[in-house]
Each structure stands twice: as structure tokens, then as C-alpha cells.
Length: 255
Image 1 (cartoon, rainbow, N blue to C red):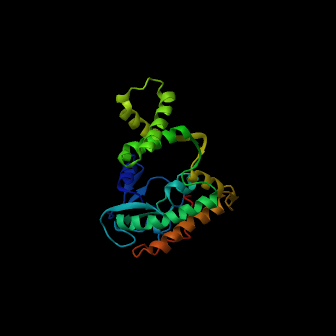
Image 2: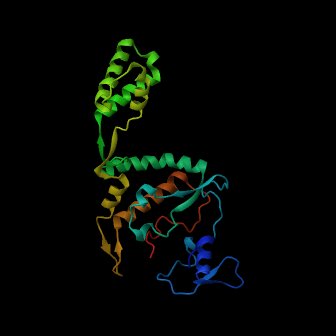
Image 3: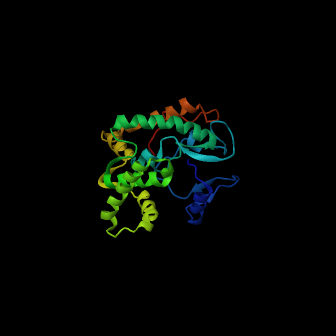
């Protein structure tokens, strides 16, 4: 058995790959044998669910929440991340925002755990761009509050940079335009060795691979990581309207 949305069901019907079951309002039967066995009848994945927040039960301003953040999930093996909505849960905006504050604490813990900043590693920076940008921004934002000698120093910082950057003769009436352009300078970019935080984390978590009794790849460290996020979600949000069939220890693989 499996669940799908109306669009996917219509696709099966239009392709003559399924037929509507008689005496059933919202059920189809495939005309071919699927590769997998699908889900058990009493599994969370085939349970009827309502469009309400799993935390408070509200039905307004709903959003799909990734129990395991997308910054990690997008880098997971296809057999883990594809075709599974087990870790996609409905939350209202209030409950979502409340939990995200707690989730950020766990993400920050991953900085030390995986030895990589949340913004990734491998950035290339231009110190002179940064210096000019900060000086220009200060003059634009609050020059009337800056002492004259400090203003002159900041102005010289911008103009010294501009001589090499633009290679055009400076005219006094252009200074505001120069400040504006310098304040918008990009002083860093992703270098050739750049790697995202989530990408590095999943690479580490999948470095240990074990074949199960069917010869299929499994990743014990990744399993533990996903279940850690599931437990964190339960502990910190304590959802009152989440199905009893939803489990921290549910299988992470879709096969």
C-alpha cells in the first residue's frame, strides 16, 4: 500500500497504469507489480491524516516542516531522501517558528560535531573590499555622528580603494555615488574548495557503510542522526496531535 496526492493518482490513471477501485472514493489499484512491497496497512505512511498542525491542532497558516532539516536531507543517499514523507509534518507558523529556535541550537552543535561552520567552508575573501564596504556604509549611515577626523580617515579609505577599483579620475560631485557602490561590494565568494555544512556532515555520516542481509547499503551513523532529529522534535515541541503511529525508530529507507 502507498499514499499519494491527487495529482500523482491522476497521473497513474491518465497513463493507464491504475484503475479506480469500485465503491472507494479515493483509492486506486495499480495495473502492474511495484518493485517494493509498499507500507503495511497499519503503518503511519498509509494512515488518513487531516490538514492540521501536529502540535497545536490549528488549521491556519500551515507549512510543511522537515523534521530533519533540508540542509542535511538534500545530501542524503537517494534511498533515504526520496519518496518519503514520514519526516514531513504539518505545523502552523507559530509552532514552526517556536520549534525552529530550538532546532537552531542543535544545528549549532553540529558545527563542533562535524568541524564545519553552518555557512560552510572554503570561502574566498577580499579584505580590501570589506574595508572599503564598511567605511562607505558608515559614512552613508551616520556621517553626522562621526567626528570629522574619523570621517576624513573613512573617506580616504574609500577613495584609496576606488583608485585601484575603478581606475577613473575622482570628481568631487561623484562621492555619494562612490559611497553607494562601495557599500554594496561583495567581499567574499565560494571558492573552488567550498563545501556546504550539510554536505560535509552527511559525507561524514555515510563514511561507514554496512550491507544488510539483502545486500543493500545501510548507514548506521546516518540512521542515528535522523532518529536524533526525530527525538529532538518530540522532546522540544511535544506535539499533541501527532499520530501514535509516527515513530522515532521508523525505518529511514524507502525500499
